[in-house]
Image 1: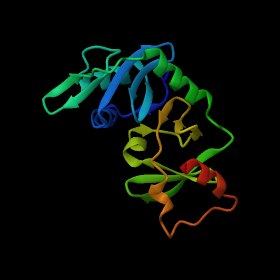
Image 2: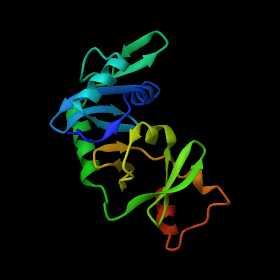
Image 3: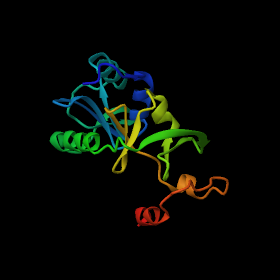
Image 4: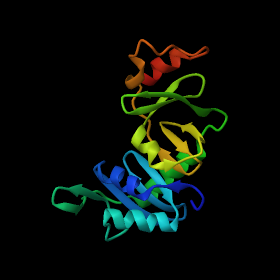
Length: 180
Protein backbone atom coordinates (compact mmCIF):
# COMPACT_ATOMS: atom_id res chain seq x y z
CA UNK A 1 0.00 0.00 0.00
CA UNK A 2 1.18 3.53 -0.71
CA UNK A 3 2.04 5.14 2.61
CA UNK A 4 5.18 7.01 1.59
CA UNK A 5 4.63 8.56 -1.85
CA UNK A 6 2.80 11.84 -1.94
CA UNK A 7 0.07 12.69 -4.40
CA UNK A 8 -1.83 15.94 -4.50
CA UNK A 9 -5.50 14.98 -3.99
CA UNK A 10 -6.84 18.20 -5.53
CA UNK A 11 -4.85 17.68 -8.74
CA UNK A 12 -5.65 13.97 -8.78
CA UNK A 13 -9.39 14.67 -8.49
CA UNK A 14 -9.20 17.29 -11.25
CA UNK A 15 -7.41 14.85 -13.56
CA UNK A 16 -9.83 12.01 -12.81
CA UNK A 17 -12.98 14.08 -13.29
CA UNK A 18 -11.67 15.46 -16.59
CA UNK A 19 -11.03 12.01 -18.09
CA UNK A 20 -14.53 10.66 -18.35
CA UNK A 21 -14.98 7.52 -16.29
CA UNK A 22 -13.26 6.76 -13.00
CA UNK A 23 -13.65 4.32 -10.15
CA UNK A 24 -12.24 3.98 -6.65
CA UNK A 25 -11.73 0.55 -5.13
CA UNK A 26 -10.10 -1.14 -2.16
CA UNK A 27 -8.38 -4.45 -2.84
CA UNK A 28 -5.40 -6.54 -1.75
CA UNK A 29 -3.16 -4.33 -3.91
CA UNK A 30 -4.20 -1.16 -2.07
CA UNK A 31 -6.58 1.77 -2.34
CA UNK A 32 -6.83 2.33 -6.07
CA UNK A 33 -8.17 5.17 -8.18
CA UNK A 34 -8.75 3.71 -11.65
CA UNK A 35 -9.18 5.70 -14.87
CA UNK A 36 -8.48 4.95 -18.51
CA UNK A 37 -5.26 7.00 -18.25
CA UNK A 38 -3.82 6.01 -14.87
CA UNK A 39 -4.18 3.85 -11.79
CA UNK A 40 -3.01 5.42 -8.56
CA UNK A 41 -2.38 3.57 -5.31
CA UNK A 42 -3.32 5.99 -2.55
CA UNK A 43 -2.69 6.05 1.17
CA UNK A 44 -5.75 5.89 3.42
CA UNK A 45 -5.75 9.67 3.87
CA UNK A 46 -5.13 10.37 0.17
CA UNK A 47 -7.91 7.92 -0.78
CA UNK A 48 -10.38 9.63 1.56
CA UNK A 49 -9.42 13.10 0.33
CA UNK A 50 -9.73 12.20 -3.37
CA UNK A 51 -13.02 10.40 -2.72
CA UNK A 52 -14.42 13.50 -0.99
CA UNK A 53 -13.19 15.83 -3.75
CA UNK A 54 -14.78 13.63 -6.42
CA UNK A 55 -17.91 13.20 -4.22
CA UNK A 56 -17.97 9.44 -4.82
CA UNK A 57 -20.82 7.87 -2.80
CA UNK A 58 -19.93 4.20 -3.45
CA UNK A 59 -16.71 2.32 -4.07
CA UNK A 60 -16.39 -0.29 -6.84
CA UNK A 61 -18.65 1.69 -9.20
CA UNK A 62 -17.62 3.58 -12.34
CA UNK A 63 -18.65 7.24 -12.35
CA UNK A 64 -18.34 10.11 -14.79
CA UNK A 65 -18.50 13.84 -14.31
CA UNK A 66 -21.31 15.47 -16.28
CA UNK A 67 -22.62 19.03 -16.45
CA UNK A 68 -25.36 17.97 -14.06
CA UNK A 69 -22.86 16.45 -11.60
CA UNK A 70 -21.60 12.97 -10.85
CA UNK A 71 -23.38 10.14 -12.68
CA UNK A 72 -23.02 6.37 -12.45
CA UNK A 73 -21.67 4.73 -15.57
CA UNK A 74 -23.23 1.61 -17.07
CA UNK A 75 -19.77 0.05 -17.22
CA UNK A 76 -19.22 -3.17 -15.31
CA UNK A 77 -16.70 -2.69 -12.46
CA UNK A 78 -14.39 -5.58 -13.43
CA UNK A 79 -12.56 -5.23 -10.12
CA UNK A 80 -10.42 -8.35 -10.44
CA UNK A 81 -9.44 -7.50 -14.00
CA UNK A 82 -8.35 -3.97 -13.06
CA UNK A 83 -6.39 -5.19 -10.05
CA UNK A 84 -4.70 -7.83 -12.21
CA UNK A 85 -3.87 -5.28 -14.91
CA UNK A 86 -2.41 -2.95 -12.28
CA UNK A 87 -0.28 -5.73 -10.79
CA UNK A 88 0.87 -6.83 -14.26
CA UNK A 89 2.13 -3.30 -14.95
CA UNK A 90 3.95 -3.11 -11.62
CA UNK A 91 5.49 -6.56 -12.05
CA UNK A 92 6.39 -5.93 -15.70
CA UNK A 93 8.32 -2.74 -15.02
CA UNK A 94 11.79 -2.84 -16.59
CA UNK A 95 13.86 -1.40 -13.75
CA UNK A 96 17.07 -1.87 -15.76
CA UNK A 97 16.02 1.01 -18.05
CA UNK A 98 14.90 3.92 -15.88
CA UNK A 99 13.44 6.95 -17.64
CA UNK A 100 15.36 10.20 -17.27
CA UNK A 101 13.82 13.62 -17.64
CA UNK A 102 15.26 15.38 -20.70
CA UNK A 103 14.06 18.73 -19.30
CA UNK A 104 12.27 19.28 -22.59
CA UNK A 105 8.64 20.36 -22.44
CA UNK A 106 6.65 19.76 -25.56
CA UNK A 107 2.95 20.36 -26.26
CA UNK A 108 1.97 20.11 -22.58
CA UNK A 109 4.21 17.09 -21.98
CA UNK A 110 7.48 16.31 -20.26
CA UNK A 111 9.84 14.29 -22.42
CA UNK A 112 11.76 11.36 -20.89
CA UNK A 113 14.28 8.92 -22.32
CA UNK A 114 15.65 5.52 -21.43
CA UNK A 115 18.65 6.16 -23.70
CA UNK A 116 17.07 4.36 -26.66
CA UNK A 117 13.76 6.08 -27.21
CA UNK A 118 11.66 8.98 -25.96
CA UNK A 119 8.52 8.83 -23.85
CA UNK A 120 6.22 11.83 -23.45
CA UNK A 121 4.04 12.14 -20.36
CA UNK A 122 1.40 14.82 -19.84
CA UNK A 123 2.63 17.50 -17.46
CA UNK A 124 -0.64 17.45 -15.51
CA UNK A 125 -0.26 13.72 -14.83
CA UNK A 126 3.29 14.07 -13.53
CA UNK A 127 2.45 17.23 -11.59
CA UNK A 128 -0.28 15.44 -9.61
CA UNK A 129 2.48 13.19 -8.22
CA UNK A 130 5.34 14.45 -6.10
CA UNK A 131 7.53 11.69 -7.44
CA UNK A 132 11.14 10.77 -6.93
CA UNK A 133 12.17 10.54 -10.60
CA UNK A 134 11.74 6.77 -10.35
CA UNK A 135 9.98 6.16 -13.68
CA UNK A 136 10.21 2.97 -15.74
CA UNK A 137 8.37 1.56 -18.73
CA UNK A 138 6.07 -1.41 -18.32
CA UNK A 139 4.49 -2.47 -21.58
CA UNK A 140 2.38 0.47 -22.72
CA UNK A 141 2.46 2.17 -19.30
CA UNK A 142 4.90 4.11 -17.15
CA UNK A 143 5.31 3.01 -13.53
CA UNK A 144 6.17 5.84 -11.13
CA UNK A 145 7.75 5.08 -7.75
CA UNK A 146 6.86 1.42 -8.14
CA UNK A 147 3.21 2.01 -7.24
CA UNK A 148 1.58 4.43 -9.74
CA UNK A 149 0.78 3.49 -13.35
CA UNK A 150 0.17 6.22 -15.93
CA UNK A 151 -0.09 6.20 -19.71
CA UNK A 152 2.43 7.99 -21.88
CA UNK A 153 1.34 10.22 -24.74
CA UNK A 154 1.36 8.81 -28.27
CA UNK A 155 4.79 9.02 -29.88
CA UNK A 156 3.65 11.32 -32.67
CA UNK A 157 3.78 14.21 -30.16
CA UNK A 158 7.59 14.16 -30.34
CA UNK A 159 8.43 12.23 -33.51
CA UNK A 160 7.60 15.01 -35.94
CA UNK A 161 9.90 17.63 -34.41
CA UNK A 162 12.98 18.47 -36.46
CA UNK A 163 14.91 19.77 -33.47
CA UNK A 164 14.85 16.44 -31.57
CA UNK A 165 17.73 14.26 -32.65
CA UNK A 166 17.89 10.51 -32.35
CA UNK A 167 19.96 9.28 -29.45
CA UNK A 168 22.94 7.03 -30.24
CA UNK A 169 21.72 3.45 -30.25
CA UNK A 170 18.04 4.27 -30.79
CA UNK A 171 16.29 1.30 -32.29
CA UNK A 172 14.44 2.73 -35.29
CA UNK A 173 13.19 -0.72 -36.36
CA UNK A 174 11.55 -1.27 -32.97
CA UNK A 175 9.94 2.17 -33.24
CA UNK A 176 8.55 1.22 -36.66
CA UNK A 177 7.10 -2.00 -35.22
CA UNK A 178 5.52 -0.06 -32.34
CA UNK A 179 3.70 2.17 -34.82
CA UNK A 180 1.93 -0.82 -36.42
